[in-house]
Amino acid sequence: MKSQLMLKTLAVTIGLGSFVLTSCVAQSTAETPAPGSSVEAPAANSPSVAPSPQTSPDALAQRVKRDVPYVPTPESVVKRMLELGEVGSDDVIYDLGSGDGRIVITAAKQYGARGVGIDIDPERIQEANANAQKAGVIDRVRFRQQDLLQADFSEATVVTLYLLPEVNLRLRPQLLNQLRPGTRIVSHAFDMGDWKPEQVVEVDGRTIYAWTVPEKVPENLRQASQG
Ligand SMILES: C[S@@+](CC[C@H](N)C(=O)[O-])C[C@H]1O[C@@H](n2cnc3c(N)ncnc32)[C@H](O)[C@@H]1O
Image (cartoon, rainbow, N blue to C red; front, top):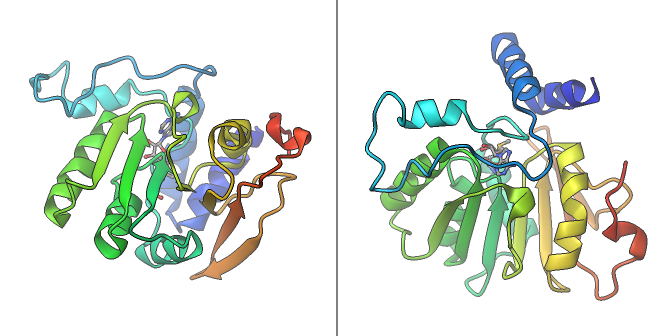
């Protein structure tokens, strides 16, 4: 029930119509995975996977167990997120749940950063790779088909998120255990429970939250929070 309400909030933040909203809620309810679950099919972007009725990206995407539906961040919000993350050419930016790759592609194109996008959906990975090619940044970005809750993102100097409140809270211990002090975390729309953000900014009706991983992480923040 709570999860459905949160999904509605996510959809409302991007102004989707009621048809799409209903689809997202239905899809997410049906596809909410058990912790640690991943995809049930190989990467569709692998050149060795020949599309067929059984293995086409569409067919694979149907079998992916997403924790969050795909909703892209508007470009104006992407721009502000990268500013809040103080992204520069020395940074390695990870977008956890990277969709069509727009956040890491923009970071590479505008700031010369290196970027890694992680998404569980092979169709999104394929789309992100095509977008990186078009943007001329394939030397600086990579996209990995993986469950973000199982991922190693310890090399990141900036992490971006557009997930859901409960996914942020499940991810929080991982972020604080893996990331080095000084790493910036920027989240579109959702906060991190009792880990208070350093900055909260509004852009075009959207809220962006920003944190920096502290030298000394309070023990309560290392544990999964109920908010
Ligand atoms: C709301 S979209 C955000 C896309 C992109 N970050 C942006 O801001 O435009 C969330 C993305 O997370 C992906 N996703 C959902 N559950 C995931 C999981 N467990 N592991 C990795 N990616 C996941 C979805 O496929 C979707 O592309």
